[in-house]
Length: 367
Image 1 (cartoon, rainbow, N blue to C red):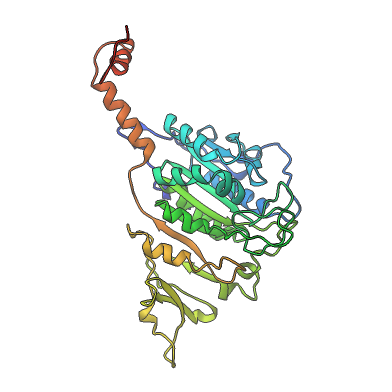
Image 2: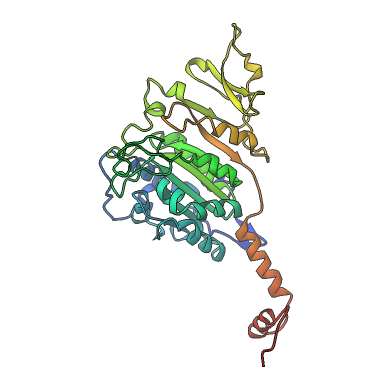
């Protein structure tokens, strides 16, 4: 996908949002690669995601100085060091809040958040859901390895119940979060899931996420070879991935498995969806009866039902792709419009306008 294919807004109300490259100017992945030594454990899925992002960023057609990556705390949060863009290694769980301030005050920037399942869903859970609810212009990459890697192997908010770790030697008692379900419940306008080792799919999802105006959340299944190796074998192993991955493509029937033998239909018993065998034999369902994926549906109910197919314990089936992609006014656009409207309603110098705004409404004089 080229930069011209991305429907990024060039202007809003006559204001240039993100200055594009000069005509004829090109960039490559090397232009977005810093001089810092990349330091993750050998075999970590973060390497694959980093290379995909470095290779993808030139396709945005944006200047490096108009891109900023904000991270929290965790293995994934080293990301800003390895990118030749602006970046900030912020504090635990607060990356969405800091990124909200950047996006609201600097309309000319493309703002990204890099976070992990522990950083985003534990101490940062409140900040994440409100960024999604507000629909700030952010692209959030949530690396999910279902473990705390940086602090050496404690269970995380996405670890399965019964998980044996250093902090749960008798097994975790917690019920895990489903990040996609959480994002849809917070009414996120763009919610997707992809896999670290699938470069093509990862890049296509990143392209769509970057093109979306509003908050985009992309959950990335990312293997931790040291503390949780094999957590995603079902969706990665050639022997099982066809049966495990439920591919989502807007406008297409949801069908998967070897030779498309399985599919999704609505379940009248629960109001959700269920997996069925496809064919014309006993107990099988006709292809015409399969659920057609509609990522643009304003009602997130069906997308939420699809997200619930992910096993909260051992991963057996996982919908992969874009669950939801809808338009809604963004918080930062609305905030800037409100400020402009307030400023235009008051005449005089900047000092006089500021005094009028501060003294407007109800005031009291204290003797």
